[in-house]
Amino acid sequence: MAKIPMLNPIVEMDGDEMTRILWQQIKDELICPFVELNTEYYDLGLRHRDETDDQVTVDAALATQRLGVAVKCATITPNAQRVEEYNLKQMWKSPNATIRAILDGTVFRAPIITSNIAPAVRFWEKPITIARHAYGDVYKASEMAIPGAGRVELVYTAENGETERKLVHEFKGAGLIQGMHNTDASIRAFAHSCFRYALETKQDLWFSTKDTISKTYDQTFKLIFQEIYDRDYKADFEKNGIEYFYTLIDDAVARVIRSKGGFIWALKNYDGDVMSDMVSTAFGSLAMMTSVLVSPSGVYEFEAAHGTVTRHYYRYLKGEETSTNPMATIFAWTGALNKRGELDGNEALCAFAAKLEAACMAAVEEGCVTGDLAALIGPTAKKLTSIEFLRNVRARLEN
Ligand code: NAP
Ligand code: MG
Image (cartoon, rainbow, N blue to C red):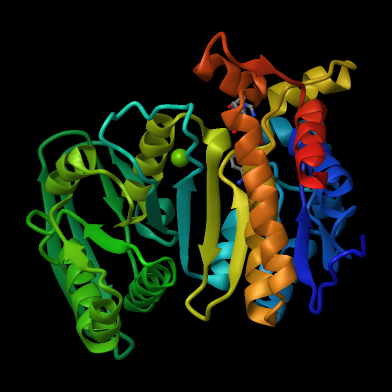
Protein backbone atom coordinates (compact mmCIF):
# COMPACT_ATOMS: atom_id res chain seq x y z
CA MET A 1 0.00 0.00 0.00
CA ALA A 2 1.32 3.45 -0.90
CA LYS A 3 2.17 5.66 2.04
CA ILE A 4 0.07 8.76 2.68
CA PRO A 5 1.96 11.88 1.57
CA MET A 6 2.25 15.03 3.70
CA LEU A 7 2.20 18.26 1.71
CA ASN A 8 3.66 20.44 4.46
CA PRO A 9 5.83 19.54 7.42
CA ILE A 10 4.93 19.65 11.10
CA VAL A 11 7.39 20.64 13.80
CA GLU A 12 8.62 17.60 15.71
CA MET A 13 10.06 18.28 19.18
CA ASP A 14 11.78 15.24 20.63
CA GLY A 15 12.14 14.95 24.40
CA ASP A 16 13.54 12.96 27.29
CA GLU A 17 13.70 9.67 29.14
CA MET A 18 10.90 7.08 28.79
CA THR A 19 8.81 9.28 26.52
CA ARG A 20 11.80 9.69 24.19
CA ILE A 21 11.98 5.89 23.89
CA LEU A 22 8.23 5.70 23.24
CA TRP A 23 8.53 8.54 20.72
CA GLN A 24 10.80 6.55 18.45
CA GLN A 25 8.77 3.36 18.88
CA ILE A 26 5.52 5.15 18.00
CA LYS A 27 7.10 6.54 14.85
CA ASP A 28 8.59 3.17 13.87
CA GLU A 29 5.51 1.05 14.59
CA LEU A 30 2.53 3.28 13.98
CA ILE A 31 3.38 6.24 11.76
CA CYS A 32 6.27 5.68 9.37
CA PRO A 33 4.88 2.39 7.95
CA PHE A 34 1.75 4.28 6.82
CA VAL A 35 2.68 7.94 6.31
CA GLU A 36 5.46 9.60 4.30
CA LEU A 37 6.33 11.48 7.47
CA ASN A 38 7.36 15.07 6.83
CA THR A 39 8.67 16.87 9.91
CA GLU A 40 11.09 19.62 10.83
CA TYR A 41 12.95 17.91 13.68
CA TYR A 42 14.13 19.70 16.85
CA ASP A 43 15.85 17.73 19.58
CA LEU A 44 14.60 19.16 22.89
CA GLY A 45 16.29 16.37 24.83
CA LEU A 46 18.03 17.94 27.83
CA ARG A 47 21.54 17.24 26.54
CA HIS A 48 20.90 19.03 23.27
CA ARG A 49 19.15 21.94 25.00
CA ASP A 50 22.28 22.32 27.12
CA GLU A 51 24.62 22.10 24.11
CA THR A 52 22.66 24.82 22.28
CA ASP A 53 22.21 27.03 25.38
CA ASP A 54 18.48 26.28 25.00
CA GLN A 55 18.41 27.99 21.60
CA VAL A 56 16.85 24.81 20.17
CA THR A 57 13.71 25.39 22.26
CA VAL A 58 13.37 28.94 20.95
CA ASP A 59 13.98 27.73 17.38
CA ALA A 60 11.33 25.04 17.77
CA ALA A 61 8.79 27.58 19.00
CA LEU A 62 9.59 29.95 16.11
CA ALA A 63 9.26 27.06 13.66
CA THR A 64 5.84 26.32 15.17
CA GLN A 65 4.78 29.89 14.47
CA ARG A 66 5.95 29.48 10.89
CA LEU A 67 4.54 26.01 10.15
CA GLY A 68 1.38 26.23 12.29
CA VAL A 69 1.44 22.72 13.78
CA ALA A 70 3.82 21.02 16.22
CA VAL A 71 3.99 17.78 18.17
CA LYS A 72 6.07 17.71 21.34
CA CYS A 73 7.45 14.89 23.44
CA ALA A 74 7.59 15.33 27.23
CA THR A 75 10.79 17.01 28.40
CA ILE A 76 12.68 17.33 31.66
CA THR A 77 12.33 20.64 33.45
CA PRO A 78 15.71 20.85 35.14
CA ASN A 79 16.02 21.22 38.90
CA ALA A 80 19.15 21.11 41.07
CA GLN A 81 19.30 17.31 40.87
CA ARG A 82 19.09 17.36 37.05
CA VAL A 83 21.84 19.98 36.84
CA GLU A 84 24.08 17.48 38.56
CA GLU A 85 22.77 14.40 36.73
CA TYR A 86 23.32 15.97 33.30
CA ASN A 87 26.20 18.24 34.27
CA LEU A 88 24.28 21.24 32.89
CA LYS A 89 25.75 24.67 32.21
CA GLN A 90 22.78 26.17 34.05
CA MET A 91 19.29 25.33 35.30
CA TRP A 92 17.46 25.92 32.01
CA LYS A 93 13.88 27.11 32.13
CA SER A 94 10.97 24.76 31.51
CA PRO A 95 10.71 24.21 27.73
CA ASN A 96 6.94 24.51 28.00
CA ALA A 97 7.28 27.90 29.68
CA THR A 98 9.69 29.07 26.96
CA ILE A 99 7.41 27.85 24.18
CA ARG A 100 4.30 29.36 25.79
CA ALA A 101 6.06 32.68 26.29
CA ILE A 102 6.72 32.79 22.53
CA LEU A 103 3.42 31.37 21.25
CA ASP A 104 1.14 32.78 24.03
CA GLY A 105 -2.34 31.31 24.31
CA THR A 106 -4.15 28.61 26.14
CA VAL A 107 -3.58 24.96 27.03
CA PHE A 108 -6.57 22.68 26.42
CA ARG A 109 -6.55 19.33 28.21
CA ALA A 110 -9.09 16.61 27.55
CA PRO A 111 -9.34 13.01 28.77
CA ILE A 112 -9.41 10.07 26.37
CA ILE A 113 -12.56 8.22 27.43
CA THR A 114 -13.08 4.50 26.89
CA SER A 115 -16.12 2.36 27.70
CA ASN A 116 -14.29 0.07 30.13
CA ILE A 117 -12.78 2.72 32.39
CA ALA A 118 -15.53 4.35 34.41
CA PRO A 119 -14.98 7.92 35.60
CA ALA A 120 -14.99 8.39 39.35
CA VAL A 121 -17.94 10.77 38.87
CA ARG A 122 -20.74 8.53 37.64
CA PHE A 123 -22.68 11.32 35.85
CA TRP A 124 -19.84 12.08 33.46
CA GLU A 125 -20.53 10.68 29.99
CA LYS A 126 -18.45 12.98 27.80
CA PRO A 127 -15.00 14.53 28.21
CA ILE A 128 -14.55 17.75 30.15
CA THR A 129 -11.89 19.87 28.50
CA ILE A 130 -9.94 22.21 30.76
CA ALA A 131 -8.77 25.45 29.11
CA ARG A 132 -5.96 26.79 31.27
CA HIS A 133 -4.64 30.32 30.89
CA ALA A 134 -0.90 29.78 30.62
CA TYR A 135 0.41 33.20 31.65
CA GLY A 136 0.99 35.16 34.87
CA ASP A 137 -0.76 35.21 38.26
CA VAL A 138 0.98 33.21 40.97
CA TYR A 139 3.37 31.65 38.38
CA LYS A 140 5.06 35.01 37.86
CA ALA A 141 4.60 36.51 41.31
CA SER A 142 6.99 38.30 43.64
CA GLU A 143 6.82 37.15 47.22
CA MET A 144 8.31 38.51 50.39
CA ALA A 145 8.45 37.30 53.94
CA ILE A 146 7.71 40.24 56.26
CA PRO A 147 10.01 39.95 59.25
CA GLY A 148 8.05 42.10 61.68
CA ALA A 149 5.72 45.04 62.22
CA GLY A 150 5.52 47.53 59.37
CA ARG A 151 3.46 48.82 56.48
CA VAL A 152 3.20 47.17 53.06
CA GLU A 153 1.90 49.11 50.05
CA LEU A 154 1.43 48.54 46.34
CA VAL A 155 3.12 51.32 44.34
CA TYR A 156 2.51 51.94 40.65
CA THR A 157 4.89 54.36 38.94
CA ALA A 158 3.61 55.51 35.56
CA GLU A 159 6.01 56.32 32.72
CA ASN A 160 5.54 60.03 33.42
CA GLY A 161 6.62 59.48 37.02
CA GLU A 162 3.19 59.82 38.61
CA THR A 163 2.56 57.29 41.33
CA GLU A 164 -0.44 55.58 42.82
CA ARG A 165 -0.34 53.76 46.16
CA LYS A 166 -2.55 51.32 47.89
CA LEU A 167 -2.23 49.86 51.38
CA VAL A 168 -1.86 46.07 51.44
CA HIS A 169 -1.56 45.62 55.18
CA GLU A 170 -0.39 47.30 58.35
CA PHE A 171 1.61 44.44 59.88
CA LYS A 172 1.73 44.13 63.67
CA GLY A 173 4.16 41.20 63.47
CA ALA A 174 5.78 38.83 60.98
CA GLY A 175 3.84 37.75 57.89
CA LEU A 176 3.87 37.25 54.14
CA ILE A 177 3.00 39.15 50.99
CA GLN A 178 2.67 38.27 47.33
CA GLY A 179 2.41 40.55 44.31
CA MET A 180 1.13 39.07 41.08
CA HIS A 181 0.08 40.41 37.72
CA ASN A 182 -1.56 39.73 34.43
CA THR A 183 -1.92 41.81 31.29
CA ASP A 184 -5.02 42.79 29.34
CA ALA A 185 -3.28 41.55 26.18
CA SER A 186 -2.75 38.07 27.59
CA ILE A 187 -6.29 37.83 28.98
CA ARG A 188 -7.66 38.87 25.58
CA ALA A 189 -5.55 36.24 23.85
CA PHE A 190 -6.82 33.66 26.36
CA ALA A 191 -10.42 34.62 25.65
CA HIS A 192 -9.99 34.46 21.86
CA SER A 193 -8.32 31.02 22.07
CA CYS A 194 -11.19 29.70 24.21
CA PHE A 195 -13.98 31.05 22.00
CA ARG A 196 -12.28 29.75 18.85
CA TYR A 197 -11.66 26.32 20.33
CA ALA A 198 -15.29 26.07 21.48
CA LEU A 199 -16.47 26.90 17.95
CA GLU A 200 -14.01 24.48 16.39
CA THR A 201 -15.01 21.58 18.66
CA LYS A 202 -18.69 22.68 18.88
CA GLN A 203 -18.82 22.54 22.65
CA ASP A 204 -20.24 24.97 25.21
CA LEU A 205 -17.69 27.17 26.96
CA TRP A 206 -17.83 27.77 30.70
CA PHE A 207 -15.62 30.32 32.42
CA SER A 208 -15.29 30.83 36.14
CA THR A 209 -13.28 33.03 38.49
CA LYS A 210 -13.72 34.46 41.99
CA ASP A 211 -14.92 37.87 40.83
CA THR A 212 -17.13 38.47 43.89
CA ILE A 213 -14.03 38.60 46.10
CA SER A 214 -11.45 39.83 43.61
CA LYS A 215 -13.38 42.84 42.39
CA THR A 216 -10.65 44.26 40.17
CA TYR A 217 -8.41 41.34 39.22
CA ASP A 218 -10.88 38.50 38.55
CA GLN A 219 -13.64 40.92 37.60
CA THR A 220 -11.46 42.20 34.74
CA PHE A 221 -11.09 38.65 33.39
CA LYS A 222 -14.87 38.30 33.46
CA LEU A 223 -15.49 41.66 31.75
CA ILE A 224 -12.91 41.06 29.02
CA PHE A 225 -14.40 37.64 28.21
CA GLN A 226 -17.92 39.11 28.04
CA GLU A 227 -16.86 42.04 25.86
CA ILE A 228 -15.03 39.79 23.39
CA TYR A 229 -17.87 37.28 23.33
CA ASP A 230 -20.54 39.89 22.65
CA ARG A 231 -18.50 41.61 19.97
CA ASP A 232 -16.80 38.75 18.10
CA TYR A 233 -18.37 35.37 18.84
CA LYS A 234 -22.00 35.63 20.01
CA ALA A 235 -23.47 35.32 16.53
CA ASP A 236 -21.32 32.31 15.63
CA PHE A 237 -22.06 30.57 18.93
CA GLU A 238 -25.80 30.99 18.34
CA LYS A 239 -25.49 29.74 14.76
CA ASN A 240 -23.70 26.61 16.04
CA GLY A 241 -26.14 26.03 18.90
CA ILE A 242 -23.49 26.34 21.62
CA GLU A 243 -23.38 28.70 24.57
CA TYR A 244 -20.95 30.80 26.58
CA PHE A 245 -21.64 30.75 30.27
CA TYR A 246 -19.88 32.61 33.10
CA THR A 247 -20.32 31.56 36.70
CA LEU A 248 -18.55 31.98 40.02
CA ILE A 249 -15.90 29.28 40.53
CA ASP A 250 -17.64 27.75 43.57
CA ASP A 251 -20.83 27.36 41.59
CA ALA A 252 -18.88 25.99 38.61
CA VAL A 253 -17.26 23.25 40.73
CA ALA A 254 -20.67 22.07 41.91
CA ARG A 255 -22.14 22.19 38.39
CA VAL A 256 -19.16 20.34 36.87
CA ILE A 257 -19.65 17.43 39.27
CA ARG A 258 -23.38 17.24 38.50
CA SER A 259 -22.88 17.62 34.73
CA LYS A 260 -22.74 14.98 32.00
CA GLY A 261 -19.52 16.55 30.63
CA GLY A 262 -19.09 17.54 27.00
CA PHE A 263 -17.97 21.16 27.49
CA ILE A 264 -14.87 23.31 27.84
CA TRP A 265 -14.12 24.80 31.25
CA ALA A 266 -11.90 27.87 31.02
CA LEU A 267 -9.89 28.69 34.11
CA LYS A 268 -7.22 31.10 35.28
CA ASN A 269 -3.68 29.76 35.48
CA TYR A 270 -3.70 28.33 39.01
CA ASP A 271 -7.30 27.11 38.90
CA GLY A 272 -6.55 25.36 35.59
CA ASP A 273 -3.43 23.72 37.00
CA VAL A 274 -5.33 22.24 39.94
CA MET A 275 -8.60 21.42 38.18
CA SER A 276 -6.90 19.65 35.27
CA ASP A 277 -5.26 17.22 37.69
CA MET A 278 -8.57 16.70 39.46
CA VAL A 279 -10.50 16.14 36.23
CA SER A 280 -7.85 13.84 34.70
CA THR A 281 -7.63 11.73 37.83
CA ALA A 282 -11.42 11.48 38.04
CA PHE A 283 -11.50 10.31 34.42
CA GLY A 284 -8.89 7.62 35.14
CA SER A 285 -5.27 8.50 34.43
CA LEU A 286 -2.83 11.23 33.46
CA ALA A 287 -1.61 8.87 30.73
CA MET A 288 -5.08 9.19 29.12
CA MET A 289 -5.04 12.98 28.92
CA THR A 290 -4.34 14.93 25.74
CA SER A 291 -3.00 18.47 25.77
CA VAL A 292 -2.85 21.12 23.07
CA LEU A 293 -1.58 24.68 23.21
CA VAL A 294 -3.58 26.98 20.92
CA SER A 295 -2.06 30.39 20.29
CA PRO A 296 -4.19 33.47 19.59
CA SER A 297 -2.79 33.49 16.05
CA GLY A 298 -4.17 29.96 15.53
CA VAL A 299 -0.98 27.90 15.89
CA TYR A 300 -1.26 24.42 17.49
CA GLU A 301 1.22 22.49 19.63
CA PHE A 302 0.14 18.97 20.65
CA GLU A 303 1.68 17.01 23.55
CA ALA A 304 0.89 14.48 26.27
CA ALA A 305 -0.18 15.90 29.63
CA HIS A 306 2.21 13.69 31.61
CA GLY A 307 5.97 14.00 32.11
CA THR A 308 8.93 11.88 31.01
CA VAL A 309 8.00 9.00 33.39
CA THR A 310 11.44 8.95 35.01
CA ARG A 311 10.77 5.98 37.30
CA HIS A 312 10.01 3.75 34.32
CA TYR A 313 13.06 5.05 32.44
CA TYR A 314 15.43 4.04 35.20
CA ARG A 315 13.91 0.54 35.05
CA TYR A 316 14.28 0.57 31.25
CA LEU A 317 17.98 1.48 31.63
CA LYS A 318 18.41 -1.60 33.79
CA GLY A 319 17.17 -3.68 30.86
CA GLU A 320 13.57 -4.16 32.01
CA GLU A 321 10.69 -4.05 29.49
CA THR A 322 8.39 -1.35 30.86
CA SER A 323 4.65 -1.09 30.61
CA THR A 324 4.46 2.67 30.12
CA ASN A 325 1.24 3.91 28.55
CA PRO A 326 1.89 5.55 25.14
CA MET A 327 -1.75 6.63 24.54
CA ALA A 328 -1.36 10.34 25.28
CA THR A 329 1.79 10.56 23.16
CA ILE A 330 0.12 8.71 20.26
CA PHE A 331 -2.84 11.10 20.52
CA ALA A 332 -0.43 14.04 20.40
CA TRP A 333 0.76 12.67 17.04
CA THR A 334 -2.74 12.03 15.74
CA GLY A 335 -3.82 15.51 16.86
CA ALA A 336 -0.94 17.08 14.95
CA LEU A 337 -1.36 14.92 11.83
CA ASN A 338 -5.10 15.60 11.78
CA LYS A 339 -4.57 19.35 12.14
CA ARG A 340 -1.94 19.29 9.36
CA GLY A 341 -4.42 17.37 7.21
CA GLU A 342 -7.18 19.90 7.91
CA LEU A 343 -4.97 22.85 7.06
CA ASP A 344 -3.66 21.22 3.86
CA GLY A 345 -6.99 19.70 2.76
CA ASN A 346 -5.28 16.29 3.04
CA GLU A 347 -8.24 14.01 3.75
CA ALA A 348 -6.17 10.82 3.67
CA LEU A 349 -3.99 12.15 6.49
CA CYS A 350 -7.04 13.09 8.61
CA ALA A 351 -8.55 9.67 7.96
CA PHE A 352 -5.30 7.98 9.01
CA ALA A 353 -5.22 9.95 12.28
CA ALA A 354 -8.81 8.90 13.00
CA LYS A 355 -8.03 5.23 12.21
CA LEU A 356 -4.99 5.23 14.46
CA GLU A 357 -7.04 6.67 17.33
CA ALA A 358 -9.79 4.11 16.71
CA ALA A 359 -7.24 1.26 16.74
CA CYS A 360 -5.87 2.49 20.10
CA MET A 361 -9.38 2.78 21.54
CA ALA A 362 -10.27 -0.71 20.33
CA ALA A 363 -7.15 -2.16 21.97
CA VAL A 364 -7.95 -0.50 25.30
CA GLU A 365 -11.65 -1.38 25.10
CA GLU A 366 -10.76 -5.03 24.51
CA GLY A 367 -8.58 -4.87 27.61
CA CYS A 368 -5.20 -5.02 25.82
CA VAL A 369 -3.54 -2.33 27.92
CA THR A 370 -0.44 -1.18 29.78
CA GLY A 371 -0.08 -1.71 33.53
CA ASP A 372 -1.58 1.60 34.66
CA LEU A 373 -4.88 0.83 32.89
CA ALA A 374 -4.81 -2.87 33.77
CA ALA A 375 -4.96 -1.77 37.39
CA LEU A 376 -8.04 0.36 36.65
CA ILE A 377 -9.86 -2.24 34.52
CA GLY A 378 -9.28 -5.19 36.82
CA PRO A 379 -8.96 -8.93 36.18
CA THR A 380 -10.40 -8.88 32.62
CA ALA A 381 -7.46 -6.78 31.41
CA LYS A 382 -4.46 -8.26 29.65
CA LYS A 383 -1.34 -6.39 30.73
CA LEU A 384 1.09 -5.65 27.90
CA THR A 385 4.49 -3.99 27.76
CA SER A 386 4.69 -0.72 25.84
CA ILE A 387 6.06 -2.35 22.71
CA GLU A 388 3.49 -5.17 22.88
CA PHE A 389 0.75 -2.55 23.11
CA LEU A 390 2.13 -0.68 20.08
CA ARG A 391 2.32 -3.91 18.06
CA ASN A 392 -1.22 -4.81 19.10
CA VAL A 393 -2.41 -1.44 17.78
CA ARG A 394 -0.34 -1.86 14.63
CA ALA A 395 -1.94 -5.24 13.88
CA ARG A 396 -5.36 -3.58 14.17
CA LEU A 397 -4.27 -0.76 11.85
CA GLU A 398 -2.97 -3.22 9.26
CA ASN A 399 -6.33 -4.99 9.25
P1 NAP B 1 5.45 11.93 35.24
O1 NAP B 1 6.52 11.73 34.26
O2 NAP B 1 4.13 12.36 34.70
O3 NAP B 1 5.26 10.58 36.05
C1 NAP B 1 4.71 10.49 37.35
C2 NAP B 1 4.15 9.09 37.58
O4 NAP B 1 2.88 8.99 36.92
C3 NAP B 1 4.99 7.98 36.98
O5 NAP B 1 6.02 7.58 37.85
C4 NAP B 1 3.95 6.91 36.74
O6 NAP B 1 3.56 6.28 37.94
C5 NAP B 1 2.76 7.74 36.31
N1 NAP B 1 2.73 7.95 34.84
C6 NAP B 1 2.87 9.14 34.16
N2 NAP B 1 2.75 8.95 32.85
C7 NAP B 1 2.58 7.62 32.66
C8 NAP B 1 2.43 6.81 31.50
N3 NAP B 1 2.44 7.35 30.27
N4 NAP B 1 2.27 5.47 31.68
C9 NAP B 1 2.25 4.94 32.90
N5 NAP B 1 2.38 5.66 34.03
C10 NAP B 1 2.56 7.00 33.91
O7 NAP B 1 5.86 13.04 36.33
P2 NAP B 1 7.22 13.20 37.19
O8 NAP B 1 7.81 11.88 37.49
O9 NAP B 1 6.84 14.13 38.26
O10 NAP B 1 8.19 13.98 36.22
C11 NAP B 1 9.22 13.36 35.45
C12 NAP B 1 9.89 14.42 34.59
O11 NAP B 1 8.95 14.90 33.65
C13 NAP B 1 10.40 15.62 35.36
O12 NAP B 1 11.74 15.89 34.98
C14 NAP B 1 9.50 16.76 34.93
O13 NAP B 1 10.21 17.96 34.82
C15 NAP B 1 9.01 16.32 33.60
N6 NAP B 1 7.66 16.80 33.23
C16 NAP B 1 7.50 17.20 31.93
C17 NAP B 1 6.26 17.59 31.48
C18 NAP B 1 6.11 18.01 30.06
O14 NAP B 1 7.07 18.00 29.30
N7 NAP B 1 4.94 18.37 29.62
C19 NAP B 1 5.15 17.54 32.34
C20 NAP B 1 5.36 17.09 33.65
C21 NAP B 1 6.60 16.72 34.09
P3 NAP B 1 4.25 4.91 38.47
O15 NAP B 1 5.69 5.17 38.63
O16 NAP B 1 3.51 4.69 39.75
O17 NAP B 1 3.96 3.84 37.45
MG1 MG C 1 -0.22 20.60 37.91
